Amino acid sequence: MIDTDNNLMWMRCSLGQNWNGNSFILHASGYIFDAAQRIASKTIFSGYSDWRLPTIQELNTLVYCSNGKRIQYHNDRYIHHSGEPNSKKTEGYYGCDSGDRGIYSKPTINKEFFPNSDANSYWSSSFPAHLNYRAWAVNFSEGTGRNGGRSYEHSVRLVRSGQ
Image (cartoon, rainbow, N blue to C red; front, side, top):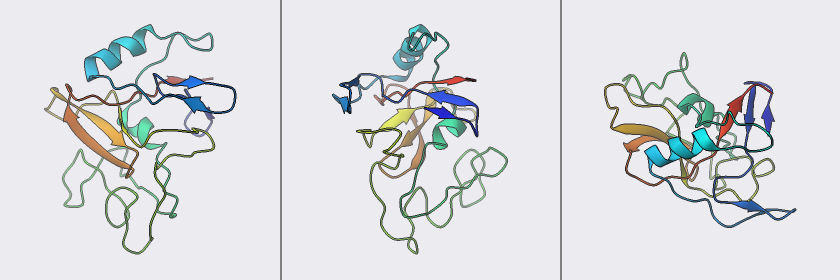
């Protein structure tokens, strides 16, 4: 999928899924962070060899809240509701959850562009400040960003810059 607003090309499938002509079969594979980085650097797909893990900002552009809630950021940084840097600021509560916006569909990703996507957490290439033993991920069950230990297994969706 090509995101012309952000000049990015996304893989429609998560690593570990296969396309059968109509939809993706199999569930996304889980990878620890270092393995996700390695496989990203070695992936050749659709004639391109410059696939990579997205930054946390890039990955969050895929969050789609079906209840109409918009996730907002301040200067490309995550600002926690208490004003702390390096976490996420949203309209109302975090992610797609919001008391005044109602329920939302899971996964919180555009199902037209990414059919049969799992509502799993997906790795980004970003690290929280001063915590390089952790990495940011987006949980597409709720549309939230989290940082977690790099030994956790999360799904991987690769991106490349340009077209």
